[in-house]
Length: 314
Image (cartoon, rainbow, N blue to C red; front, side, top):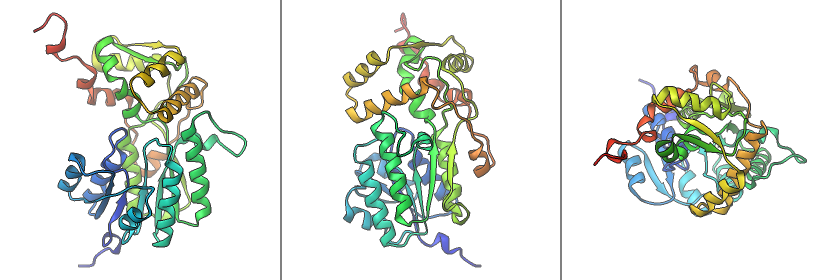
């Protein structure tokens, strides 16, 4: 019986304990199921770290901006998935991780970026500070000499719609400042599947850029109808003023950097920036992306009031 040397060293997955999007957590499970060893980098030791250990991951606590942490995380790993949540420290974390990865001679560095970077340049940017950090990070990685694969998804279904779950549950509304702009959100699970294919056999993907979308690009009126069909009750889209919406995010305690990013994202959607479709996911995985209808059906409980909370019930 022969062994595959690719399975001898662990694959590093950063952001493995993340909540919104959950690419790292899903990717960890997918790689373990394929027989790979996985070293999961987490910011803190908590129940999410323990959950990763229970499915077989080697868990390492560390900070993407700390050199010592990243040496500890990367040493012995030949393949790296780099992903990080929206943060003012995103560029620092990317360059820090890339520097250590180059020092250790990794064979592939899969970078999770954002689709809007495809339309950015030295003279064209967006109002999102996070988009600029992604663009600069892609440039830094291209200069690094590392064997990079870039993955650029559109908005995540999990972040895009589950953040609205309470409002849908309580008011039967999708309330967003997006006008009639179209968007093609994709499931983080689908993105994780694509990345797992790349990491499983990376040689053919080095230097490639994959733009990942859902199966449909549509406006919020269309998605409200999809919600209605999936939930069996009428859900309506309400276009709300951007200023009032962002003020609500601030009052909810979201960090200023994230608020600015979300405000820019909704405005770009309104102006048609995210009206895009690709078949890159199918090319990578041989499977179609999850539809909004199937996603809503899967998470129907989160969009539906329980009987105990229905007015008039005890």
